[in-house]
Amino acid sequence: MEKSIENIWKEGFLKNDALVAPKINDLYNQKSIHIIDKFKRMFRINLIAIVAFAFVFLIVTFFIGIPIMGIMFFVTLMALVIINKKLLNGLEEIDKGSNSYQYLKEFNNWIKMQVAINKRMSTFLYPIMFMSFILGFWFKDSEGSLLGKRLVDHIVLNFPDLYLIFGIPLIGIVIVVLILSLLAYFGGRIYKWDLNLVYGRVFKKLNEILADLESLRT
Amino acid sequence: MSNDFYKTSILPFSGIIIKLCRGYTNSQEDFEDYYQEVCLQIWRSKDNFREESQWSTWIYRISLNVCLTLLKKKKKKGQHFVSDSLPAEETEDNYAFSDESLNLLYDAIRKLSEIDRAIIMLYLEEKPYKEIAEIIGTNPNNIGVRVKRIKIRLKNILDGKIN
Image 1 (cartoon, rainbow over the protein chains, first blue to last red):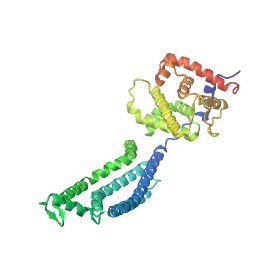
Image 2 (cartoon, one colour):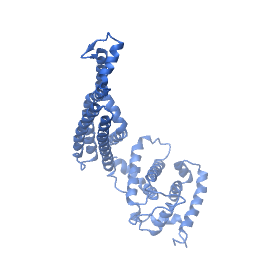
Image 3 (tube, rainbow over the protein chains, first blue to last red):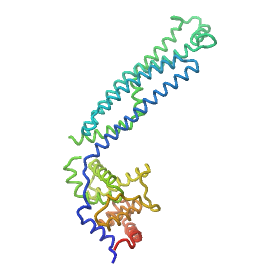
Image 4 (cartoon, rainbow over the protein chains, first blue to last red):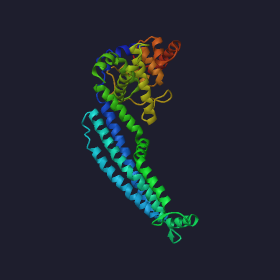
């Protein structure tokens, strides 16, 4: 006679091996290693993308006659990449063998240090980029003379009373200095916004796991 | 997760968690992942338990929701696909009970839809229809009809395989 499914179920689970609970020990370790690996991967891709962009931009600016912008962008971005690559090497030194809490804590400290360094660099980075934009166009060749010079001549022709310093209208210098100051002041915030856009989800996950682990320790 | 919480609040109900997780996985590795995730979610959600239902009912609900969520995630990743119309993924050889009939029954259960799997496993655990309905979130009257249909389906799948 065929057994009913109720009997198969009951009798099957009477045997000792059927209900052995797995050990609960590795989940947080797996999650923490996974989240850091994900961050490293994203970080590396980001650096490669910056290098690729810097090269492409450099070539393009040569072709369209604003090489100064390209060179300044290239040098600035390369400096950024080199510093961040060095920071990334420091991340490799975090001991994967330590417990999850320590591992994530060290990673979190690394993130804080990385953010602090990049925030400081952003104070210079965005103004330099803006200046490279201005200088790039200023020194662009325009029918045998500099574009900036031609622009000033044109303005002076229309506004002959303009006060000039080294041949540049004072009002222009004031506006540029104002924009540079604003970029320097908000550079850190722009960087944080940019950072959250790219890594926001990873950081959120990291904070959740850390909060969980911290509540376990209390 | 504290050891005490696990021992006092989860371990006594580990049987049904194991049985449910087995119904949604095909390998030991997946099973361990599902089991750990269920335990973790129970621990994380413990403060949300408002004693409107029994602790056990609440645990079954979490177990089921976690299993369904993980299954969906896996399907999205294309690692796993089980449905009414397609054959279930092969079960790993080392992921078997010593009781051959139970293995065949589980293989048959894995061929059911996700909800039918939950209903039949809770039914086999002798949960009353009212509690099954509460866990699934449906009407108790529908459960009785559904259980009958699932049993016929399982019988057809197992026909001749078990003596």
